[in-house]
Image (cartoon, rainbow, N blue to C red; front, side):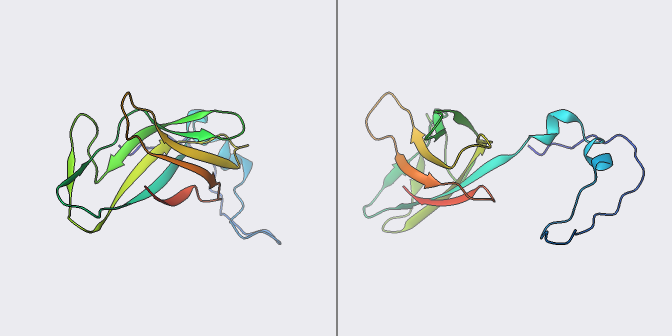
Amino acid sequence: MIKSIPLIPVLKATPKVLPGETKPHVGTEVLSSIAPEFLEDSFVYVHCYFENTSRDMLIRVWRTTYLVDRFSGSKSELVHTENISLAPMWTLIPDNATYNFLLVFSALPKSCKQFDLIEEIPQPGGFWVQNIPRNERDVYHVNI
């Protein structure tokens, strides 16, 4: 789902790049015109790759899949998936091929420097990718 950001009419402001900056400067008048609930709204994108070395492999992801901040233990929730089924459904993946899918999570805490990708499920086989270093874009590529 794509959210639209409601704006309050303000004077036109032209973004400009200040000396020493690489991104356009956004004036306070623009920031104050954005509804407060959307200022902190961001997402984390995790591109997952699964190397299938067998035949007739089925995979799925559970809603109880999280990004967990290694320092605080804070959990970011799974909000969207692409190219993979949510449990209890299954996805049949091609034989002897690398299969990719996308997981989208709610924002990590600003203080997070490293996190784990954990699928908490009531049976064996949940995936766990440890010590993922945080980056500026919050876009990651991991092997499952």
